[in-house]
Image (cartoon, rainbow over all chains, first blue to last red; front, side):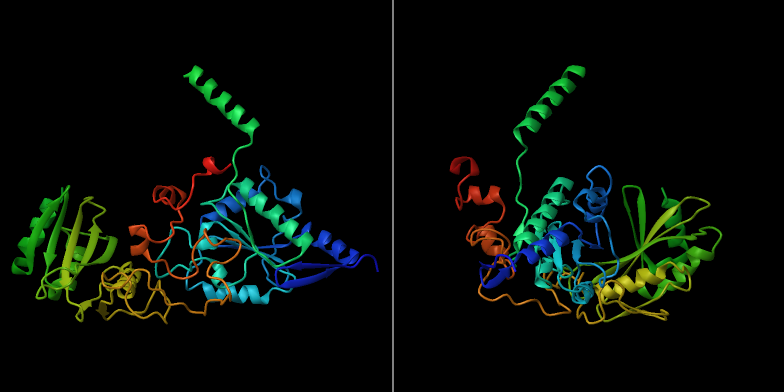
Length: 187
Length: 213
């Protein structure tokens, strides 16, 4: 049986065993994505999936364009009021366990749109697990969000999380300063 | 530019072409609504004009006009491939009036007229398929009219109810987009919580990040 640990996250009580830990490990490293791409964030999604910012190293490279076969719903781009029932239906057709990533500000909170057609954030329609803000988010931020989701799958729980804005690490700051100095010399 | 074209139209139509304006090299002719299709056919078929390239058909809502002047301006932009001349044709339409459809003249006017109907509510006589094109059929009202409130949504499905919070997690009380509609007047006056860090700093609602750590 192994160790039995009761983990309380807010109002959801979980009992985790070693087997559940194994399941969590298997699930988080083999996410089948459903890219629900509607707008410009799709370009960034393609960039994340391409070799430079590889998403395949995290095991999440296999897109499945059927909700029956996918477990991670990437909502990429603006969702209009006309699109909302479609998104709800796709989410309902997915089998448990399923997770939702809100990619970009339009999916997270409506973005810069405040009008009669845009749904101000898809969390008004479906529950969201990870929000990745940005317009569009940097691929590094997207990978941050994916790793956050993987951590969330490991520890269980239903709280949504968001990718916070990050500062450049100090080495990158030094290098970018050197680059700009070099460019000034060349000019 | 196309002054010659505009003058030629006016000389053909006589009293029906009321005004000619020029703005940055583009000439506009304002015609009566009753002469709309006749003018379009003239432009398309007459060898002097030969406007075979349909460019644009839209409408403009002038809400602040006097009540006796029609509210909408329907604007047609066509071009001739041979002579490379462009002309802008305008007409004035009232709210409940119908206008002749130009689908029999240029096929490209089909979806343009559907969009005008969807956004402004101007109906077109003898249009083959006049229905909404951008908004969904359950939508009520015509959104690009100036008296339609821009943030009035008509959701097709019910929004989720999340009890016990006015802000969705993971945002704390002091951050994030509010769950309900934003009160813009209060926010501009500085009474509501400003989401933008720069403005909230300015209004004194939060400390700068550099001060806290």
